[in-house]
Length: 399
Image (cartoon, rainbow, N blue to C red; front, side, top):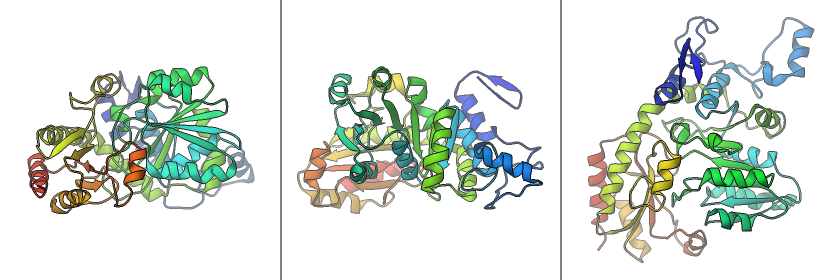
């Protein structure tokens, strides 16, 4: 339950819409401005030595220097923490800044990280990078609880998760994993970018830390790069005074303002993304040129029942595999699309298409359980029938 403008509401989608639109809009504090202003300043001045001394002793609770805290960023952080049912949030200059900070906060020399499911590539690149600091890792593609328990080592300190996972969108049983991890004293971190806080709340299932690339659906307009960590106040404060301050990955005031703007329309956009994506996925499933569609909202998907338990909805990111063994056919499909634009990232208005393979990396993909014939699409907010027609015409380009 949360109070917004004196309204007391139970946790439901209507309340989440109110969080997106009005939580933190302190009209008295902001001189009646209907949109929270941008505090585009690097530092804050004080009336006395005693005042600045108090700020130095507790920077998390005071405005001292924008690298640490800023009123514009704070509005966004309050909203995102409330959406995730977390106690606290800190936003970063990118999703990778949030990911690396969360990993560094719970690991040291001699520790081990277990990555479970298909994981965002740069996160694994970072895991390889920190090997030079004596931090080891393994990747487990099959996320069953028995497999996870067997893969845990005596020095495992972090289970890093994605659910649904990158490219294949397989799901993990988060309550089971959280229970096992707590029994063994292991910290769980999940990238919840795909689902957004509207469709999945990992903290409610026992996960310790949630990270987001706010560049995607939360920003929603492909015009801001940002990340966030949401967790207990104790954990976020710990990260604030160490990894956040010392890595220097702070979010600028303008970017924070753009994210608050994005949150205002997040519920409306996610409803449309879900509606469009399901329609596209169902049609792709019937196409004779398509061998498989990876989208947990489909009844044919192996994760459909788990999705009904853990998700309140489904985003617009999915993938499909073409019936071919020739990578030239993948290129033909991608190049033949008109509405779907070729590009990385996802979560904006525009629909995007990207092959899993960049050419010549089939062996690497096979080790990840990903077919070189796989194509990822981010279904945007355009008319669904136009998007379906675009993909249908593109698929006709292959024999």
